Length: 255
Ligand code: ZN
Ligand code: FE
Image 1 (cartoon, helix red, strand yellow):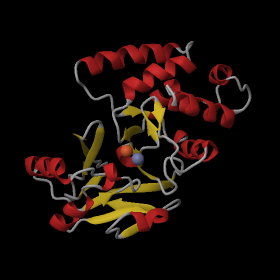
Image 2 (cartoon, rainbow, N blue to C red):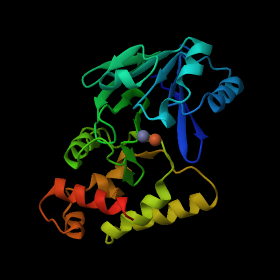
Image 3 (cartoon, rainbow, N blue to C red):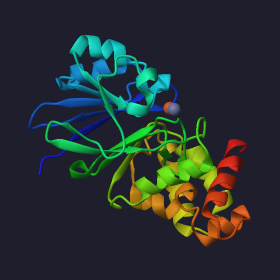
């Protein structure tokens, strides 16, 4: 079965932009281009022709390169229906229960409000790839700028049930700071302490820690584990996943 070849492009301070290239048709999507220039460079180097721009949400560090790339390549901009007015140049609006196809690869789209009210995620099952923007980070989750903890927990719930081998392509390298926080709310989790050591070693060598699999996140990311007794205990609200999620998100905001 064909699948995407995925290139990770580091931009700005800590953003990751992705190119997803279908070798069988030549179609190439960029996901959340913060800036046009770094994308242009990789397109020149690979010879890939940009056909699609996928946006998870309207923040500038995810759409900043849209206009230039669209003008240069006549690429189609696909973004959240709920944020149509905040994504200049949007061509195709998608949301829950929609699919969208790039080359031979079809994404299932999820509405995942919380970080912003219009945030979406694209899941390409055949490529085992989830592009979730600022919803789930490695060992963390997005800040709640426009949503409630309950909404974000529900959004994470939609992604948490995908196959464990799914690779989570998030939009920022926040992993090391997230790991420092995670051990404060899940201190007895051996898989987490092991992972933190690996992350520290990778960052010391300047390596990317993204993506990780959903299975790894389920085992170690406290924001996916608010239903676990150990995390609920640490948060001080046993038996209540939403309150636990809200409490650890609040603590992380002040960490
Ligand atoms: Zn954002
Ligand atoms: Fe962002």
